[in-house]
Length: 172
Image (cartoon, rainbow, N blue to C red):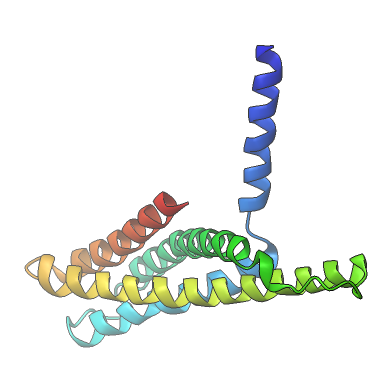
């Protein structure tokens, strides 16, 4: 009896893992967006705090790529959460008329799911970008303002990305 319960919970867990894994198409959208976003604070710290670009290039590269990877997870978590919620709310929007055949109805439903997925990805990128930039500004200009500029950059960008990823994971 317990073997059946264990097998059933493993099936549910494996189903969640398969559903929650981002596709290569989604990763092709998430990572470049996250990388472009993490380069914005680089310009701010270069122009306002006077960080020399060539002196700290390895630091900028590691922090930007690392934060972009973390933000990619945050993008996907929010997009997956929103898609799941919207698909369940939009179940009744596909009209079920007597004339439509099952394959036409299935095609309409699949199109609705694809539209919902694109909408959730766009919202996720917008939402996470706004929160990330807000976090960088608050941390960089208020919380760590007395720290040295390289230390301020590393903490502001890394902590903003980590906090965003943490909060997005808690929503899933």
